[in-house]
Image 1 (cartoon, rainbow, N blue to C red):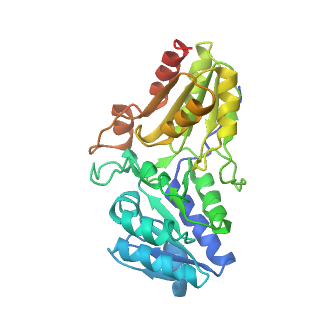
Image 2 (image 1 turned 90 degrees about the vertical axis):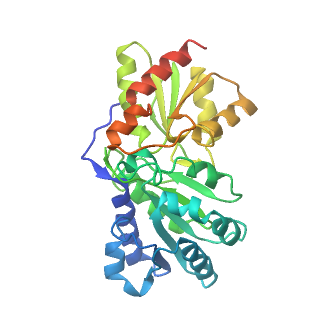
Amino acid sequence: MKKYTNTGNKDTRSGFGAGLAELGKNNENVVALCADLTGSLKMDEFKKNHPERFFQIGIAEANMIGIAAGMTIGGKIPFTGTFANFSTGRVYDQIRQSVAYSNKNVKICASHAGVTLGEDGATHQILEDIGLMKMLPGMTVINTCDFNQTKAATLAIAEFEGPVYLRFGRPKVANFTPENGKFEIGKAVNLIEGTDVTIIATGHLVWEALQAAEQLIEKGISAEVINIHTIKPLDEEAILASVKKTGCVVTAEEHNFLGGLGESVSRTLVENFPAPQEFVATKDTFGESGTPEQLMEKYGLNAEAIVKASEKVLKRK
């Protein structure tokens, strides 16, 4: 089984900041808008080097989305930055009408997603944003797993025409994907080949899925691990090819099991190849205050939970 090495823990939001800084140098049409969270979104370097293309909107997220939509008319490529909770729930009407319905080339970049936001608690830990955004016609939804992939995704979406929701996080997590690797929107990455169970993971749960696969092999279970960084459009071909081989699937995400990656996979299977599925996700609940590690354990969002789900789904084959 192929093993992956953590080259050093880094936060995915810094991957976004690094990608945005590189775009600032290489693409004069890229502009950045922030809702009073420049440091938290790691947009400082872009602001320092390109002050004429950086716009501090303040705590006025709805206005930020409207301004960004307007900027696209003049050929600009706006990247908006704030917490995931404020990037989606607070401004859903503006995104629906001014960005999605109008098919504007806005890149909605959202940090501090999921329970790993940590101590700020349930009011800030959005767990329904993937569902909100994937339901919007024409919206591309991306959820990256580490620093390197977040940087690559940030560069890739600048070249992509159309509205994008890019979701990443606050804590330092394992950095294990290739540096300067190519990011293909809508193309899943098969990390480990396996024959007994398919584990489909996104975001922070991808590293946990890799750890789970190592634990499963010790139990004599061969797990195939797929990194779904693009939740919409979903790589149905890769999912079906794997599940037809293994016969069962576990989906893992730092999101509510209602409306997230798991439901998208379920729809794909129901329409094409019905198979047993188990969900590693939050179960229709809000989060609470705690460290990221404490919360991931409490809500069953770790390697141990993926191992248990894999053993359970195997019994249903």
